[in-house]
Structure formats: C-alpha cells, structure tokens
Length: 390
Image (tube, rainbow, N blue to C red; front, top):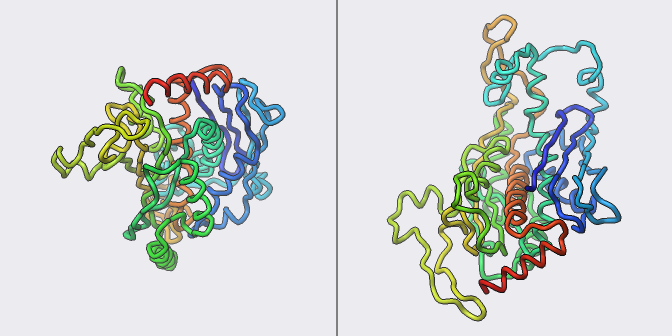
C-alpha cells in the first residue's frame, strides 16, 4: 500500500511528509518535487504569504544517489515565515496572545469544540491550507512513478467565479507525453493555469473586482490522466472502487466542496443513450475503442482504458479582508471574525493540490495491481499485463 502522512503547522518550523510503500529504484530528485511546489505557489490572486515563502524540499531519507531505496521517503519543507513567529509558535512552555474570534467557513469553531481549546490558533495552524504543500510533495513523488509507466496528468482551471473557460486540451488520441509537455509549456505563460486566454482575462478582472470589495472567489479545476491502463481499482468491495477513492482524496483538499467524474452532474439530466459510451471494434493494435468518454475513464469503480477525467469545485476562501460576523469566545458577544493575510483566489493552487491527490491515488492503485519491491519488477509485471489486452 502506498501511503503518506504529514506533520507541521502553518507558521511552525516547517512541514514534514513521509511517503511509504514506494518500490526501490525509482529515479527521484529534490527538483522533481520543487517544480510542483513552485506550481502551487503561482497564480493571480495569491496573498502576501506566497511572497515570503520559497518552497523547497529537502529529501532526508529513503533516497540514495537519485534513486529510492524501498524504505520510507522523508521530506522537509521549511517555513521561511517561521522567523516572524518564533515566540507565537514556540514548542516550549509559555504563553502568546490568543485568537478568540473564529472565522466562518474555517475549522475554527468546530475545532475549538472538538479538542477543547480556548485559542483559535491551536486549530487554524494545522487546518490551514499551508499543509497542502506537503501533500503536493507526496503527489509529486507519485507523479514521478506514474511518468515512469507512461501516465501523465494534465491539470488546469476551467472556472473562476461565474467565468467559465472553453477547454480544448487533448483528452484522448494523443501521446500522453506530448500532450503533457505541450500543456506544461503553455501553463508557464498563463496567470491562472487556464488554457482559454479570453476566459483567463475575464477571470483576472473578476478577481480584481472581488479584491476591491474585500471579497474572495472560488472556482472549478479539471484533472485529466492520460495513459491509464484498464483494470485499476475493483468493484469487489465499496472501499476499493477507484472512483470513490479519487473522490475521497480530492474532497479532502482544503476548500473543495464537490467532485465529479466524467459528465458527473450533467449525466443526471440526460437519458442513458446520451450518457453511456458505446464499445466499438478497435483500430490497429487495439482490440476495442470507445465512441466517447462520458464516464471519465471509470466504470464500476475500475479504469476502462480511457483518460480519467475529474473536476473539483472550490468554495471561495473563508478569510475575508472585510470579515464576516462572528463572536468572541471569551464573552460570546458579537464580533468581527479574526483576519490575517489571505488570498483573494487560490483556485490555481488548489488545482495543483487536486492534481497531486489524483496522482497519489492512481499511483497507489497502479502499485496495487502491478506491485513489486523494485521498479524493475513493477515494470516487468505491467509489460506482461499489457500484452494481454493490446
């Protein structure tokens, strides 16, 4: 089983992530992870924190001379902002000013009740989306494994607020490597990771209007996995269905409130004849092909060989420059919610985190199907399997 755990607070010394279950011999460098951390930090509408941090990972275990050892991979991402928070976030006994006004839309109030705290900071520091940097590091490692077996993920923004993009990125019929490299080059020239230039300009204007009102905006991201073989996941038990595992991982990303695979909610309004994907005789070396991919590459909780297509909806960030009404927990009287710095729109960053989440689940499912203790064994198992369905 491929798994990871993270530790660390938003303004603590840093974030730690341990990835367990990787086979030995996987090529892995710090730069593989740093590229993804940098993608997470970019995007129009980000706040002051991203001007402080320059996320870089240190691999502190599980890798030697650029290849995994088969033991757990440990990674550290230091928080540069720690220098400004040494006293407030000290691990030694002491006191610091309390935060007593919970913010609507955050875990603040629920966390206070659950853990019996009297200081909102004890909740917000761990519940913060800062922790997603560690998840991106874990997902980056998984993406390296997927690339080794020919799977590539495209992730991009399709909506911000009420502005929706027209997306024409390749989803099938093109070499995954070529499609991935083309999108990554285009992505560098965008401000919101949106492949529709006209829509992106409207999105930027919408973010500017929200900023001027002291408000925030959410949106929708899409992730497409190309080169995924049929047979990942299982319908044998509910918790092994891959669509459920993907949805669970993505819903666990901060701010995500809805997930759909393939046509998702749109399929609910259409007749079956316009929803399900006809199976046709194959062409060339393929035994079969599909007339469409409305299922988003998953049927019965199992990949069917088509691209895996998933969308996630992110709510607007809950920390507003013009705070919403709340109460002070010392008096339970009305008060404005606590406010520290915040993004106006973090949809592009959320898209990178969602991409990381999808990468990790797919890598876990791949190793579940073709697992071995070394990459040589994994690729040998996969090659034998491919001979059976091609």
